[in-house]
Amino acid sequence: MSQREQFSSRLGFLLIAAGCAIGLGNVWRFPYITGQYGGAIFVIMYLVFLLLIGVPLLTIELSIGRASRRSIARCYEVLEKPGSKWHLNKFWQIPGSYILTSFYGVITGWLLFYCVAFATGFFGHNTTQEVAVQKFNGLLANPYLMYTCMITVVAVSFGIVALGVVKGVERITKPMMILLFALLIFMAVRSVTLPGFAEGISYYLNPSWDNMKADGFLAAVWAAMGQVFFTLSIGQGSIEIFGTYMSKEHSLPKESVLICVLDTTVALLAGFVIFPACFSYDIEPGQGPSLLFITLTTVFSNMEGGFFWGSLFFLFMLFAALSTLIAVFESIVSICMDLFGISRVKSVAINFGILALLSLPCILGFNYWSEIHPLGGTSTIMDLQDFIVSNNILPIGSLVFVLFIVGKTGMGFKRYQEECNTGNGPKLPNWMSWYLKLVLPPVVTVILLVGYYNIFLA
Image 1 (spheres, one colour):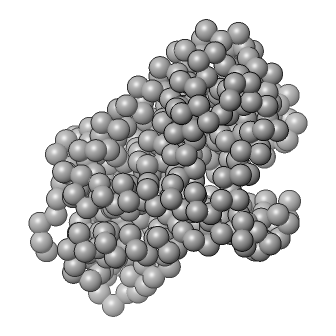
Image 2 (image 1 turned 120 degrees about the vertical axis):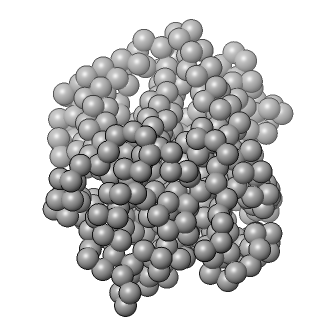
C-alpha cells in the first residue's frame, strides 16, 4: 500500500472535517426549527441525539477511513473478510457524491452572486420582500448567469483540491474556516445592538412547551434526530476520506465530539445573527432558500450599513458552502485516483468536466425545464437530487456503515474498537457493540422511513 498524505496539524483536520459538516443546513434549517420546536428544550434534545447518534456514526466513518487508508472506492476491499460482497455498496454510494455536488455547486454559485451583489450595491436601500423575490426569481430564470457562478466556485474548489491534501485542502480550508468562525462571532456580537435582539433571542432560545406541543412532541423528536443525522454529512464517504488522512495520535471518540462541537457552534450562532435581525425589521423568518435569498436580503437592505453587513453575511455563507464543496470534491478526486490509478491533477481535470455537465439539469430545472416536477407539485430537479441524497443515500449509507462494523464478514467490532481507541482521549467501551447492533440500526431505519413519510404521505 502506497504512503498516503496526512494532515500537517490536528487543527487542520478538525477544521476541515467540521467544514464538511458545516453547510447550508446549519443556517437555513437549524435556527428555524429550534424556534419552532421549543427553543432551549429543542436544543437540549438535539444535543442528546447528537451524542447518541451523531458521535457514534462519525466514529464509524472515520474508523473505516483511518483503518483502510483508502477512499470509499477501496475501503471495503481492504477491511472486509475474503469472499464477502460489502464492496458492492460503493457502486451506489459513489454516485451520491456526484449528485450532491451537481446541485450544491449551483447553490454555492447563488451565494457567490449575492455576496458580490451586496458588495456592489445591486440591492437598493429598503428592498421589500416582493422586490427580493423578483431579484431571486430573476437569477433562477437566467441559466447563463447561474452557470457562470456555478462554474466559478467549482473551478476554485477543484483548483484547491488539485494542489493536494496539505498544500491545497488544508492550507486553504484551515484559514478559511478560522475566518468563517471570526465572521460569525463578529456578526453575532453585533446583533446585540439591534432593537429586536431581546425579542429575537427570546423566540429562538427561551424554553417553550407551547411551541413544541403545537406540532407535537414526536414531530420535535424526528426534527432533532433528522437534523443531527443530516448536518454531519454521514453516509456517502465525505467524512470517511478525511479519516484516511488523519494521524493516530488522538482517539476517534475525542475527535468526533470536537467536530460535533464545532458544527453545533456554527448552527447556534447563526440563530443569534438571523432572529434579532428579523425581529428588528418585523420580517417573518422562514427556512430554506427563501430565508437566505429573500428574507435576509430584505433585512440587510433595510439595515443601516446593510451593503456591508449583507456582503459580510453572504461571504460567511460562501465559505461554509465552499468548505463542504471542497470536502466532497476531495472525496470524488480520491475515489478516481484509487479506482483508476491516475494522478491527482488528471482526476481533477476529468471530474471538473463531469461536474460541469452534471450541474446543467439542476440549473435548467429552474427555467427551460421548469415544467418538469419529478416529485409532483411544484418540485424541481434540485428537489429530486436532494431527495436522492438526503433521504436515500445518506441514511442507507450510514446503515450500511453500521452493519459493516458489526457484521462478521465486515470490518468487525473488535477492529473498529481498536481503531477508535488508538491515540489519546476517551475510549470506546465494550458495551458499544450491543448499542451498534440493537439500537443504532433501528434508529437510522426510522429516520429513513420518517423521511419518506414526510415527503409522500404527510
